[in-house]
Length: 67
Image (tube, rainbow, N blue to C red; front, side):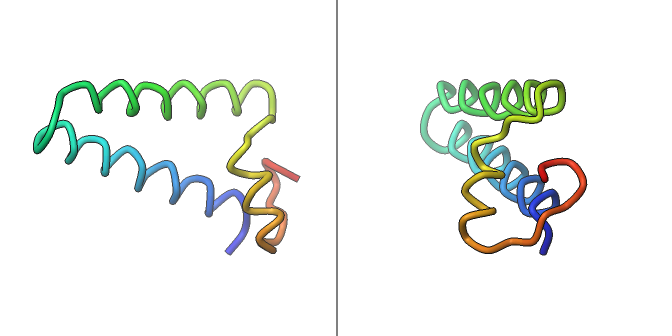
C-alpha cells in the first residue's frame, strides 16, 4: 500500500470512529472529526503530514503526494 492510500484510509477510519463515538458517548468527539479534516486540508497545501511520516517509517512505499 502506498503512503497516499494509507493516509487516506487512516483519515477515513478516524473520521468514522469519531462519528460513532459522538453518537455513543459524547458530541465532543466531533471536534476530533474537525481536527482530522483540518489536518487533511493543511497537508494538501503544505505537503506536511505527520501520518505520512509515520507510515514512511513503517515501510510503506512512497506515493506521489507525500514523497
